[in-house]
Structures are given as structure tokens and as C-alpha cells.
Image (cartoon, rainbow, N blue to C red; front, side, top):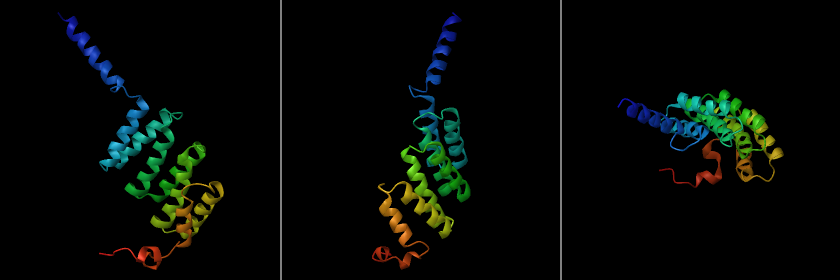
Length: 163
């Protein structure tokens, strides 16, 4: 009679450990995204970082690290940490599509958040050199053309409805 609850308990633990069929790296990514959406940024960073450290070879690791950089930039607004994290993506996962996006984000953070146009220019020029055929080249061209300009000085944006 006491055996049934123990067996049932074991099955419940096994099911929970399996994470409803998800791999542990997928579960960490999901938790990171949930925390990010809930604006629990420190928790999101912890989940993303745990994924990268525990499963560095996971196909999700470059994305998790990139997401961590975006949380630092947009959620916490720690621009230095954001750039450091994007640099880690490039150094650790140079062949990942997230490497190019991280290089772009470095320029974007310097230009639009930290307002350091000199560093932004260097980052964008590095992007153009490393990824000359990337789909973000038009965005980099735009950023470089209007680097340091007020939004009201950009002809393409002046025509937008300001209401």
C-alpha cells in the first residue's frame, strides 16, 4: 500500500525533470525569454548566462548571449555591459548569425543609447568590413550617414506623421 505513492511520486519527479519533453538548454532559453517579457531583467540574464555556461555548444547559446546583451542595453540600460556581452558573442561564436547582429548592436548602442558617435563609427565600419554582404548593410549605411544628428535633421524621418 505504501509502494504506490512512492512509485507515483517517482513518476511525477521524472516527468518534471524531463521538462515536458524539452531539453535543458531549451528550458533555460524559455525561462530567460519569460523573465525578459516580464521585465525581470536580472533573472533573464541569469537564465541566459546559465544556458551559455552549462551548454556552450548548444545551438541556442549564441542567441542566449545575444539576448543577454539586448537585456543589458534595453532593459537595464548598462551600455558598457551590453557592449561587453555583444563582444563575447562575436569572440565565442564568430560563425553564428548572432555575431553579425551583435556587431551591429555594438554600433547601435554607442550611437543611440550611449551617444558616443566615435565608438559607434568604429563599430559600424568594422561591421561593413567584416560583413559587406549582410542584410543589415543598408541600416549601417543609414546609421553612418546620420550619426550624431538629431531625429529632426533626418529627411527620411521628417516626413513621418509627428502626431
